[in-house]
Image (cartoon, rainbow, N blue to C red):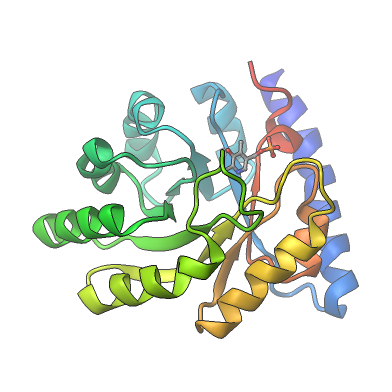
Length: 224
Ligand SMILES: *Cc1c(COP(=O)(O)O)cnc(C)c1O
């Protein structure tokens, strides 16, 4: 039941992703990575997605991830778990222990705490800087004007392997200019990975260079 519904959505999603890639270059050899946003989803739904070939998952909250993921990771050690929600200082140790990728580094204090924890535990993760591309007061992410400073700081420490940028455009706007801005910033700073695009706008994000799309409802259906 759960499996069939997710399998149907997965097939449609893959077709849409391939379609968006064709619009970029006709080249569908390098598909963006699907990061399945599994917040609010059951272990059964996650297992269905794994059976369908999903290798990367995103969770928003460290505590929810701790409740669901240790058992799943034992069964599927090859999976990559991404933190895609905001990170508080008091959760840094738990996050470094559980996640493989942290996409939401957005301030010096958190970058320093992550670097210290990674050095202490010798855990090697990939990190993205989250940019507040719409400069919205309620959203997390570093402001575009402050990216330079944060990135210099994080790179100087040498402990954080910053591989890319992540961003979420304003809810009710045309996302294209915001994705284009994030892509431009990634190019400027020599970063290869671009995590952008969700269920309703991943096609636009792929056309503008997304290497990772974070998709929840289009794969799992409505969250409970
Ligand atoms: C929930 C979430 C997603 C996925 O959203 P959908 O609209 O369900 O695809 C992507 N990114 C972040 C940061 C999220 O919190």
